Amino acid sequence: MFRTWVINKYLAKEFIKIIITISIIFFCLAIVMNIFEEVNFFKDIDIGLYTPVSLSLLYTPSLIYNMFPFIILLSGIWFFLKIRKSDEATAINIAGMSNLSIILNPSLVSILVGIFFITSINPITSVLVKKYESVKGGYERDKDYLAAITANGIWIKEKNLEINNFIRSTALQGNTFIDVSIYTFDQENNFLKRIEAKSANISTTKWDLKNVQIIDRNGKIISKDLKSYSYISMYDIHKINSLYTNLDTISFWEINDEIKLLEERGYSTKEMEAKLQRSFAFPFFLLSMVLLSSVFTLGVNFKENNSTYVFIAIISSVLIYFFNDFSAVLGETEKLPMTIAVWAPVAIVFIFSSIGIINVNQR
Picture 1: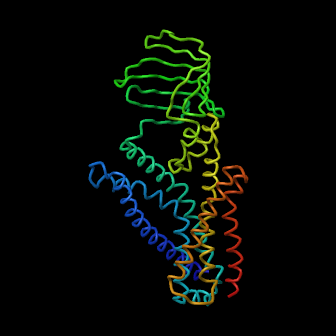
Picture 2 (picture 1 turned 120 degrees about the vertical axis):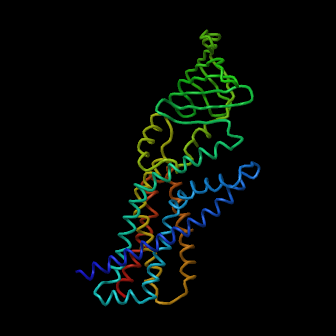
Picture 3 (picture 1 turned 180 degrees about the vertical axis):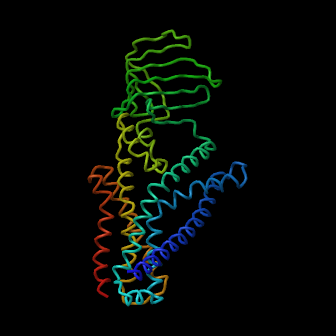
């Protein structure tokens, strides 16, 4: 019993060390690649190297989080390859542990690491991405508009050469804003007028407002009961629906609140529901990567150099990545139930790996 505990402790430590090593390698590569991208973004702005480097440091942890299943796949291949080529697997078998026992150890570690990443690392990366977008957004010359969904309604800020408009709506129903208020200010932020409308069709950037009244800066109604009124906006329904395209800014602990908020405002929650299901599936996705890596290494009879296993890992990662994304799209477009769309790739990899593990355990 004590011998088994010592072996399991050793295997867990070795696997964690390999995960950390590969994560550091990926982090350094991602930093270098992202710095080049940020430098290219700021090529026309004289800001030095500090800002691109700091932005890369803010954004890279999120990249590592999204790439982590494939980091686990490479870590698993490295781990199983190491204990196989050093004959540690044979020694462990002689000590009374089966190949299945060897595989179960890093499998358990991967689940625990997955839970830790979802509950602790993900909230940190979401804060860093928010900071990244906030800092970088200040340098985007064409970013003269801003939109947000809050507990108080849907808010939009629009800016042009002459005036600034602040728009508020209580909800979105299809292509229509409900209870719209448009506050107009000059460039010195002096209030000019307010437009109130019962609804606004935003299917195009030329909004069609219904039941409109216009109020001047002194609170006097200058136009009342207008059946229709046109307003030229920078937003249409497509831009409004893409407010949450970067879901990396939403942490695991905020997803349920965001879903409720979107439902209250009339927005689609499909992408947010997919993120929630992916978060629940994350530890099991890591588990499937470990099982797959064991099949690639312990489940083959021939001996190859390390580059062969790396090539296998890269091809597998690409195939799983596209299959995972394709399945998620089917869920978001309601071709498949969201739960099935998110969990199907995990289940398929798990089933394939389990069949291979049966063969590995018989060796």
